[in-house]
Length: 585
Image (tube, rainbow, N blue to C red; front, top):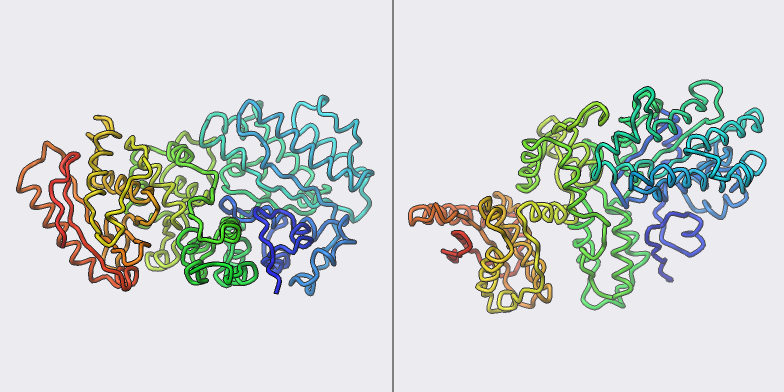
């Protein structure tokens, strides 16, 4: 049977159908949005690259009168095709996509205006009598996007007949605002300000939409669908758009975007021809994807963790084209440690330290998500607000099991993609810049000699850290450098896992090995500053490491991870940059 194509970043239902692209049918949620959202102005938030834009496009195709003649072509074979709602093909849909608005504060006003003009222009091509003419769309006559939107809404209201209404779709409503938030807090406050006499350009835009909302009076707008990443932008608008309801955490919508395990399994079956791949099984493939793209929960009662769908499709596309398992880190989020630093800079130092320590130690962060996150009313986020921001941006996710045990919402890092971003942030915080291609071949071959790793750690501490950073050096710093050397070593035969949960506690570093007959390693790292250098202190650290290793060895999860491989366990004590003790246990 002909395999279906993978269309990475798929944003158009029509394109997927025409090109025989793989498609996970989520159209049952159209009915759920109408019946169970509890609002005509739903806001649906998910982390980046989760497939929000495709969902917005599907709703556009479903509700827009203009696409009624193509309805069968677009939807035949889907769930909703056999369960039509009365509202199908009954609205004049205007679709705003703000992913192209500049995050440079001086360019926001003009690019926001251009983005709004683009949506109105597209609408006007479909409905000339209800849209705007080319002369009316001339941008030079408008100072802001709100000025243009007012002309459009006023014209539609005058031209619309009884029973004719707008359905407003806003995709990536906060894309540019989030970029500004993490780089220039004051600029963010300026564009979202609701202060009388100094209303931000975003506030004016949404206040205008609210004015024309039918639910608030006799407006021309009947329904909305708004996608984004975080609620902080809308929360900061307060009265500017208080008609919206965030439905993102409702259990019924947990799986509306993203892949379940069964859905990913079907996607693999429909797209991957394993007869063309050497020594790669479906089970191996799913294991890699579970480690890197799985782990998301958006409701504390959810039993199903979700995959980031776009990252999964990008990885499968790379697998098919390269005919080998790609490095998961090659599938980019277009994110970096600098953005995480920007988010963590919005809170107080003690809050940041608490969050960073918990994330590094893989301890659940217990926090109630705040109802509102209005940055116009505070200069710094508290712990709950910071956790909420990290959660919405994908760095954390709800841990349903811990939440049920503790009785309060608990958050963890979802997978290795975000774990790597977090570790990169921590490495930057200690002033360390990773260096790749260290030769650890003696370690991953059958000799299983870790001496090259210890030498590389010493060399990196001595050459890559300044005295100020070395003064703040900790065992966490040692783990970060060790992890970086291993994961960036030549030939990429080794994989490092910091704070690996063994079932009997968290081991400092577990090293997996893909070399034939290669050993696995469990490394328990201890650190002393030179001022604390003495035999009794070293012996105490060594004893502590030995005790921990003996406990970890009993862990069922460690045994499962190691399988039939040989596991070498080492207690290692560094003093300054020198490896003073390395004892095989």
